[in-house]
Image (cartoon, rainbow, N blue to C red; front, side, top):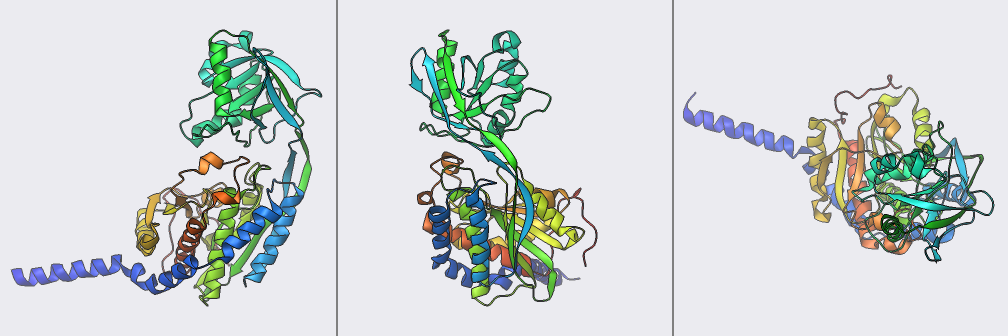
Length: 465
């Protein structure tokens, strides 16, 4: 072959490769532009979020307000034209906070900013008063030993290095301290911001250890207690918690669908969790997410679009203190797991979107990058490795490709699990961009010829119908 012929052949191959790399981008650009334009002009999604926050409020598992939110969500899914709207039943825990307070009684009398940790037991009637020992790590706690911990309240004032490490102290700190004879624990709130705002969250007991009360305190109070203790000043705290766990309550996930045109048995599911903690309004965590996912499908339906596969929205229940909604959904799918084409969870707030994390193989990453280019105009065109969430973890565990919508997350952990998680923290403009990103990505996943593939090693269920 001549040099000129070789050159033409290489150019042709290069052009073909470029065409393939842009195939999905070009295929879905007209639809993506319509969806983005519609989302950026939309007010209905934010109005639903306002109703959820102001008229229903926070939604702890087992609460009457959660049951009202579930019933209202069924109505909303039907109202926007979704089909097969139903509630997947499951039992959820019913933890009740009760009256609670904490105060330092020595060396000075001063109230502490506290919130009991979810699933904690309460104190005896009238509370308990004990001296404090304060540590920065589990290693420091073990170094103190039972001789210095027994009969005391342990304060964990760890250095905040991200939410993941902080969860270890919140989740397991009580049992670690109880093993050495502590009577209660106060845990620094899981947040980088110090504004005397305590952050609640779930904790777990080691059944091999005694159960002791556990509460979160503000970062400022944790630092103060540790500083006094390290200076050799005797510190005493009085703690009262009326927390209790009542029998499980009937509840459920809410789902609705846009039926697929040619492969309705194949499903792309997107959603977030409908429950929240019993403080604030559950606006960023996770009300904005479920309303954004619902509005994404509402706009797809409103524009008369019908993807090849079924597109399903799910409001999972009991993410905060049990995860039973995710397990119930996995049981609902049953032996048709291979028909779950992808699962996308939004559970990081609705600040400005950056793109999506994806737990898929390299070829699937390339496909998603083609789709993500359509979102560059709203700054949401990034595809990064790793994706998922607590609610879709049972699906991912069994091999379903998992995605998570990602945002800038600038202030999410300032408000997370606090009284400050309220509607005013959700920017209408950012919310609309999230709706746009979810609408484009979910439509493409449900329509494109190719299926995503989970990373090697993932297990798949049996064949579907």
